[in-house]
Image (tube, rainbow, N blue to C red; front, side):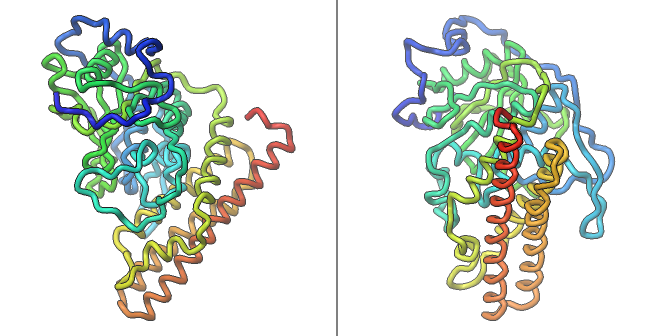
Amino acid sequence: MSKAVKRIDPAPGGYSPKNKPDILKMAEATTQLPESAKIPFSGAIRQEGPNFGPHSRAFASAATALAVLMGAPHDTSLMNAHNTTWRNDNDYYRHLMVSGEGFLFWHDVLDFFTDELPQGSEPADTWEEGYLGEKDASPILDCLAISGIKAELYSNYPAKGVTAGWDSPQALADLVLCNIAGGFPVLLFSGEPGDRILLATGYECSGETLLAWTFTAGDRDKKNTGFSPAKCKRVTDWTEHIIAAALVRTPFLPPEDVRPLLLKALARGADMLRLDSNPDRFRATFCGADKPHVYPEIWDLAERRCYLAAALTRAAEQLETDKLTAAIEAGREIHDTMWSVYAIWKQKKTKAARRQIADLLSQCRQLDFVIADTITALLADFRKEGHENE
């Protein structure tokens, strides 16, 4: 096996030789696993019909595939936009909201664990510096929980929500293979290159080869949306660059009430939008000294806020409220403004155009605060109405 990512001290809370989770004890006690294992699934993503919109977030795509293949229904609907009929992937949108990625910008899930950049990456002038505060990977668990999947999170980075770590590549391999042999899949989070998620559902050759599907951040080739069992890959040297593993621990069981997780996700999202209080952050990020960083930054922001608006629409239905309307409209307006930015820069690359773009970006940052304020007001109303426990 290849070497794992370097260990970060201190070790994650709760991880010590005297206090190990059951799965680690099982992995260490296992003397012989089956030579191969493959998990059967009870569902499939429907591929017929219009194309999905872009799925450029790796984790949200992987979480959608995981839930559906474990038996969850795939929530889709039709949408007309840009003179085209698309299929909404409402599960994907919800994962963006609950994981927090829909509230962020130019941010990958690996940033929930560490600020370290993947090898070969260059620091970027984005708004993540000092943004997330204490590392917290629990949104990943909430995202799976709202889909009816209970998991345990393992990493050598001491982020909130992490159960334990591993002390060698072989220990990581034993952890993953033991879980698969027990009949449950694993999500492997890779920090190289960028943000890549492996959905592992089996192994061959005593674990030297992993059976998995790959989801990659920024994917514009529709690989994240074209998931099917036939596209399972055989991955070797699979422990290399792994920064975390989410081990599914139970069969699919939909939650009786998703409202508590929705409200928690909304509160977290509002905090994310406010933690960086710079009202000109988009302007500073996009508009460098030479020219605006129009591509691909505007599409990252446009997709996140557009899909966040779609997720907020579904959340409002489930919460039986119309008090998210301003936030939904603000998310859609950010999306539409990015198309205006694209049109301006494509037509004329001048100083005047750059100033016009900068002003539009400042307006979008203010719309982010509208989203945050709208959510905060909704949460306050829920508390007044006696929903403190939701």
